[in-house]
Image (cartoon, rainbow over all chains, first blue to last red; front, side, top):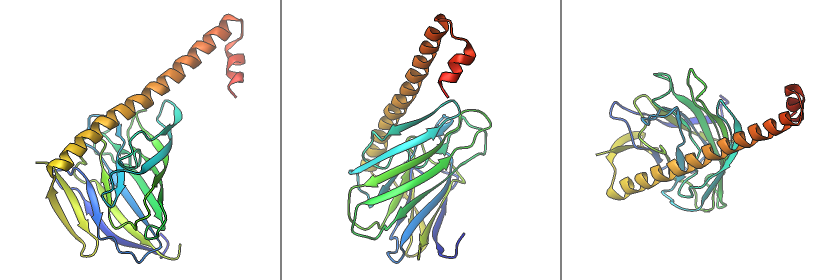
Amino acid sequence: MANTYTAIATVTVGSGGASSIEFTSIPQTYTDILVKYSLRGSDPANYINNRISFNSSTSGYSSKLLYGDGSAAGSANNSVTTAVDFSAYSTGTSATASTFSSGEAYIPNYAGSNNKSLSVDHITENNATGVITALTAGLLSNSAAITSLKITPGSGTFVQYSTATLYGIKNS
Amino acid sequence: MPTKLVVDCSTGVTTEVELTAEEIAQAEADAAAFAVAEAERIAAEEAKAAAKAAAEAKLAALGLTAEEIAALGK
């Protein structure tokens, strides 16, 4: 990873699971931020679409998704506006045991005074056709600087050993 | 009681916090919305596949070979 990346904080889910992972008091000293995650959900599915939200805002989000799920490729519009939906797919409990999704969400100019955009790429793991890989483009129509970021499962909880790391990026 | 993990980036300290009633209600609403969104996406995918199969069947009934039908999709 380029030396412009600084790991700000990392979290690993413990044995009790977690209903969400939230980074607060994000320093405003970087150009962009990036969150990389490895997630597995408790929901009995091959994969679960999760959500990213900022500053505890519960409105003003929209997103579009391009995906391939093992049987078809397609696109979708977000029908949930309380967070950037389809933004952090996790592997579910129906998938191969001990496998986790991989993904990252990039948020440029997070400390600026314009609306906030993000791009996400992600893939789930499964030794079967029930997987999904996707690219998501998201927007929060709110000009406030981002000081907190939360990842929430669409259903269920994140299981033990799920991780997320927030990076700050300078000179991007 | 469900909990969330909160990482304070200014200190690096991670805290396990119990969800408030509001957060639980929001999570339940999100889960319901998730189910609807996912069902819509899958239904659209299935409808598209069904339409494709129906179109291919009609083309086959007109006498096109499987290779000719496949060529139309390229």
